[in-house]
Length: 378
Ligand code: GLA
Image (cartoon, rainbow, N blue to C red; front, side, top):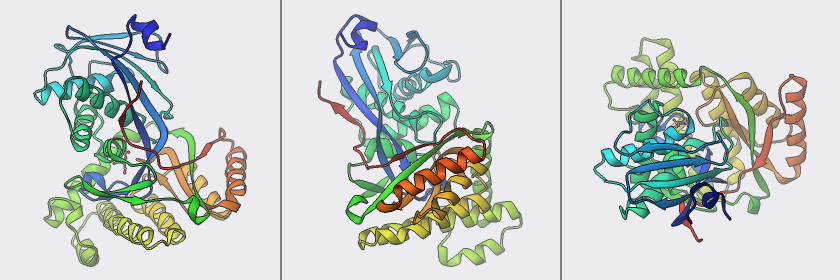
């Protein structure tokens, strides 16, 4: 008997899956309508769902809590569903708000996306719920529509002012590729990304640290970017051309805002350069751009932290071609591009450095680009 049957006493109508992600480069660009380059992880959230005849939502997680959370689709109120259930409940709320009348559902979730690690465990929950509802209610939503619903749930139901990167990555990534996404129109291109064929590995270092002020600081960075765009008279920082960066910076009085703008504009440029190198079959050469991106996030955008800097500096010193924090920052994960023959040395160096600094052992694994959200065969 499956967990779903044991919990709800019925067989599921179907099973759906949506992955976590790492972002290769393009950080804190999404809410500036810029460019990102994520890949899906093999780690994913799986939802098994039985549609109901009434308007009741029963949610159960294998991983968090020990009971079913029961809600009514007619009484979903932002901010009033505590804990993990706010993500799927928020998706139902966002779909209803978009004019879709949903059938109730019994949903069982099982996720192996590490939580609090900056690997988008919440986007995986949102997107898997949105896709399951779309299929069971025959809504036929596209990947960008699923992603927007997930983002709306997170922004307005959960209360985290995230951009669209995580949800689009989870909804749209393709196995073996990184997704070059323009967050302005949600158009993009899948770029082949086979590091093993180049004798390389992309390692993820989950620092297992999450600093408490992360969410508040994220909102402040967004506000600073908006202030920068307003000072320059453009809708979004995406509209500041790289060629005009120096002139633009000279027009901004606030020192901090000036540095935030420099990060975003140079980061968009780095995304373009990384994509050009990948297209040209020159994957080894992206390493320095990854490190440059980290330095920009650390010094100009100020969203790194000592643990992420330690992971990046140690990996680079031990033979990585380049490394950077990935995701929102203030803890979470770093990535490192490492020649095959240095993988063991880099892993050991980072593990030793964390032990030496009195930190818990980081979790280190290889990121191999996996498929985006999909219905699973049952
Ligand atoms: C978090 C947010 C994303 C994005 C990244 C930074 O992951 O959820 O929308 O802004 O931070 O690139």
